[in-house]
Image (tube, rainbow, N blue to C red; front, side, top):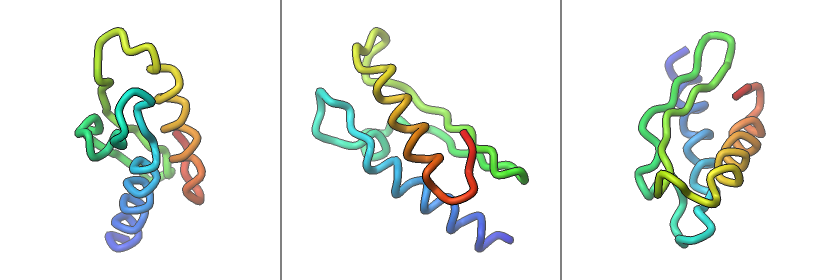
Length: 78
């Protein structure tokens, strides 16, 4: 079970590394914007993250991109 969780977490991180703030050419994971990733027994995912600025104009785009890409990992729901 632990190995399956680690594989799922690695897949989520890999997808997060494809999400970029459009103003900065660095992905949200490597920028340190992701604080925590939780996957429960029902494969529901909760990601605690921040944005680069309180009034980030790309906030909606970034959050939607994270949601779509993490949901593309087989069997997960955001």
